[in-house]
Length: 142
Image (tube, rainbow, N blue to C red; front, side, top):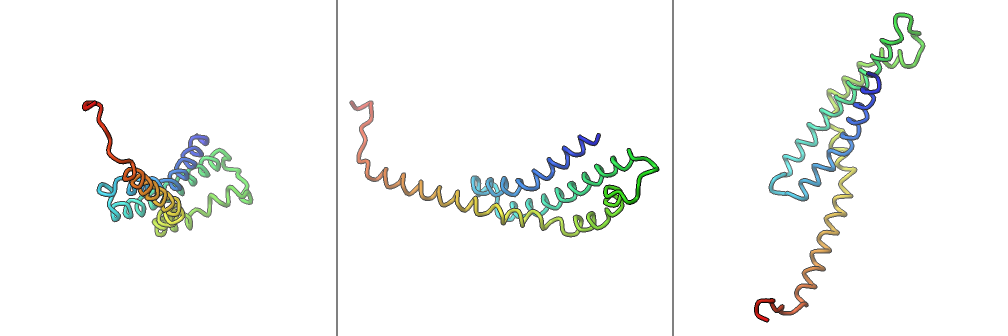
């Protein structure tokens, strides 16, 4: 059970770090399908949901460890102390978990700006090459 909870925590963390990138990439690729407000709301609510899922999976992981220690768990053990002090993490995730998504999106945005610059540069280059190519002869007329 402990390994499964650890894997869930790692997967949620990976999703939390990459979902804004995938949403912004979808907006970049399909701007009519993924409007700006749809992307922004998905990033905000997705970040909030993933932040809460991350805190809850971490607490479930610690709960499993403390339950295996039994009744004679040492209260000075750092794992037991972290398990007992779970309230602030959950309250912060509940109230401010929505901030994770936009902050991560701001961190990822230079990557997408660079992709847009490269795409426009390639489009101008291809346009310049196609105007200088001259007329083409089709195979059916030859």
